[in-house]
Amino acid sequence: MPAYLLDTNVLLRLADPSAQGHDVAGRAVSQLLARNEPCFLTPQVLIEFWAVATRPAIANGLGWDAARARLEIDRLLDQFPLLEDIPAVFYHWLALVTSHNLSGKRVHDARLIAVMEAHQVTHLLTFNVADFPSAAGISIVHPRAVTIAK
Image (tube, rainbow, N blue to C red; front, side):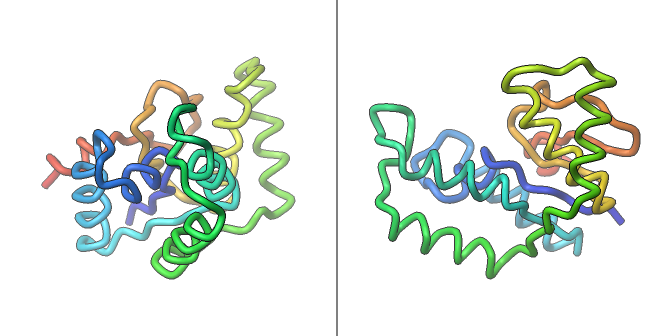
């Protein structure tokens, strides 16, 4: 059975009803859960979520205060299990950035794939499909693809 890691951009759209993609993100996650396909979070996506949620709206953030961001993270943690940052994540990450010759911001996206590999999570749900390095056994899935799947 597929298991999904939810990317930060999916969480942000779920949390912001005015965001473009809010409805498709909500439908995709609802359909995955209805099909009993587990969805997970990582500390990294929650840290990234906090950074964007508390950034001013004029700087492409949500403009929330810390209390509101904390409430939303608590809600997410109540709904989705958290994958631990275990030592194996680092070694998967190091192999990915080395084999794909990654640098700069792309190393953060590779870390999500490394978490998935370490925890045997097979699918990443993201609006930014092209941002992620390929890895054996990992499928990068746009939320629209979930909503049109049978």
